[in-house]
Image 1 (cartoon, rainbow, N blue to C red):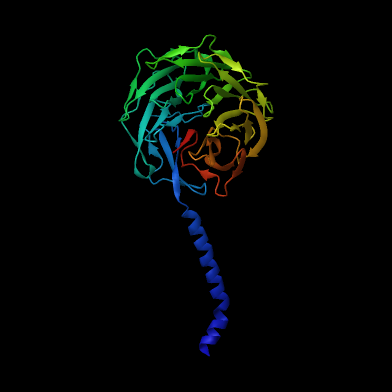
Image 2 (image 1 turned 90 degrees about the vertical axis):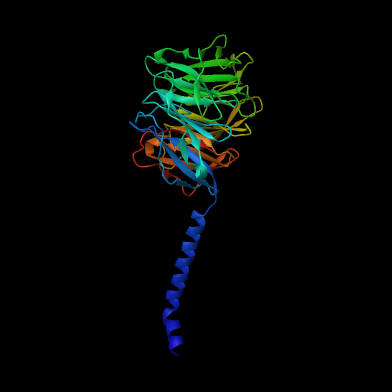
Length: 384
């Protein structure tokens, strides 16, 4: 009888307890989503630069790595770099390269067990003033865009298998101080290099010579099709197709320009380029691994525009997806499997994650994820 009385009185408590256990189990299952890779951001931290590291899970959620943020060895600026590609990863996923804009250096970090980045040696001089973007070719050729007064240039390096970064003699290509370099990047083959001059709306186009030095294309720098050329990328599937953002056209007037890059580096317009997205300040450009879709983050509008890419390189606008709390985003990159687009929302102190289905984006439930305390002007984002 006592047992029956206890069961009757405690039945609701038992049900409540089971409900709580079920909720806890669901939460545990969510947090137990397998780690599928790692995400890194250049903290651009003043005085002592840092690298923010996250484990990336199968459900798109992020968790900070133990010990993050990690020392980069050099110094950041603590203010925005207005660039794309401030941090890069080598094709084999062994090394990170990050700009130290406050100390005019480049840091190389080895990715160790559990995704933890460790300095491979002391940072090296960037060969100029205020490095803002870095590019790594499949062969280990590295170029840095320096945008500071008194040292604006592109400078080349070789990255050895042990992580040593060695300058290439005679590789520096100077540009006027007012250029405001915004991005430097290779095509998929590593034999062409592009640099954007955001301050003067020009595009530098180079052929990479066998020794790693650059040969400027006839007619380079080329006048952009809009104002404020900033982020850009070659199509991973068609190395001659080039896409560049026009970030400074004005409110609601953002465009993406599409070019064909010839064998000798001359740029010619594709279709009816530039292609409008009706948003403000499209700055960061990322292309799906199959080359079929292009995403651009509109920093002024706090959203992401999606385009489909036709076989000839012309673009068709699909639409725009809002970023929860967005409006001060500073770079974006896809995960290696192409399932997620991750956005460095530096100005709002978080990272946003979107599930990708063709050209459609859906922000995952766990997004956004806070950046580490003290990181207020991060730059760049990469995934392995």
